[in-house]
Picture 1 (tube, rainbow, N blue to C red):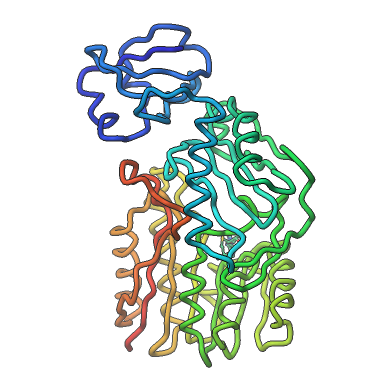
Picture 2 (picture 1 turned 180 degrees about the horizontal axis):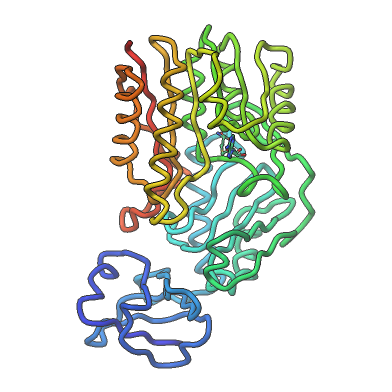
Length: 391
Ligand code: SAH
């Protein structure tokens, strides 16, 4: 096993439970440091600190899995998986059969995402280290949560940074149907786990969708960046008078139409519109009582932050202008690089420029199946606010 020795003082974050070691923190190594492997981490005085997965191709050289001397094998992953599963099934109950089973660092398995959709699960292996344990993880998952099929959606920027190609397809069992039916808080949705965005559905908005249903009785609602219509279904369920479902993706909107139909709202007043939400918000003459703004991440890198804050301000400014007095705005950012306090300042700037007086009625964020490690605050990507326009 590879042994890595950290530079003096660079052991402190690791001792406090942070799971990341960048290349600059490593002083020397014993063993082959050119391969993807399990690595033991030591401080400068050769004190053992923890065990993780090493990737020579990534600047983020090691992601720690444990601070105990335990073997990293199928049974290690089986224990973590069954702990995560037990908590989800206990907390989310019978009215939810879709949830995030493993949330990377938040479940102390950095580099792995597992989403469960009814009888299927979808895995994303983000790091070379986790990728090398794919067989063990699939076996452990099949045992902890027997399913009809396990599908892989390992793709995207993080994998490229790890020197990995995209890998998409069946990992075990049957291939998923084109549209898989799930239930969330009693609402029904179809999910395309093969081709949909991320793993197919934005499970991280479950709690905020539920909140929305308590705010829509008799109101007109604009669901902007609607994807497959999650917030729209809850808006109708809460008694909305009219719902506009807006997104740029045609496949997403086709599924949104089917989701409205599945829940009995295909004839309910409203519209499903395809277009650019930035242009729509600027140009439309319509006014709404409730607006949901859930844009994709506008800052993929820290260096995008300036441009991204401009984008968030634009969206919130125009949304606030289109709200009737007493109106509600649910505004989100899923950019990991935009901290909550900065997001709040951006929305404040938008309110000032829109000439509106606004109160925060609730801070919004991750549901319980998207835990954030206290030792790894970088894992908090989703932040939102429920706002009320006073005048
Ligand atoms: N609120 C959704 C998730 C939104 S994800 C839910 O609860 O499921 C972000 C969405 O923004 C995606 O569906 C994407 O297609 C859409 N999108 C990206 N750029 C857009 C743009 N310029 N205008 C409108 N929609 C856009």
